[in-house]
Image 1 (cartoon, rainbow, N blue to C red):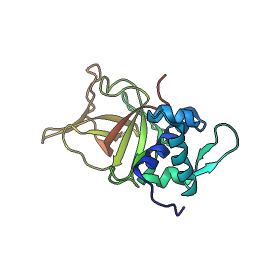
Image 2 (cartoon, helix red, strand yellow):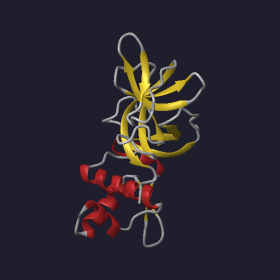
Image 3 (cartoon, helix red, strand yellow):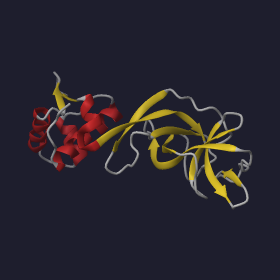
Amino acid sequence: MDSKPLTDRERDVLKAIVDFLEAAGFPPSLRDLCRKLKLSSKNSVHIHVQNLIKKGYLARKKGSRILEAAQAAMETAGGLIQVPILGRVPAGPPNLAVQDIEGYIKLDRNTIKGGKDLFALKVKGDSMEPELFADDIVLVKPAQTANNRERVVARTEEGGVTLKIFRDNGKEAWLEAVNPKYKPIKEPVEIIGRIAGVFGSYPPRK
């Protein structure tokens, strides 16, 4: 889509629409947008929405909730990229991570390096509590090496995939949990990636 550049306010409005769609499953009304953007005037929001429609970032839809974010806009407006959520990664005993795409998160490509290679995984288990909790989303940057104390996703000899702290004292390397009830993993592992960011649970906790 060859869309015209957005102003900062238009970008804020479009992001609010995308966020609302992801959380609620349907597009917002002007009143919803006013609440989300903390604005009192529906007229000012309406003007920005009209500009987004003219620029090709939104499409009209019949009904009181008339806004529908164009799919291409989600990927390109304001430098947004879609990062796939690939199943779950155990934060506990190693297990296979299901590679089915469960959803997407939207990120600003201007603040994230290596956007094309990034993927996200859903945490399962409690071995990284209280740092990470079940259903939290971790953003992973593919890598085959890691520095001491970095959070990594790794594959064990049995093919299990787990999220842990990488430890290396210069003589040996192992994986370590935050939760003290879990023992270190000292068997050989293959590092899949480094944790580049952490998000709340997906879908959001109620």
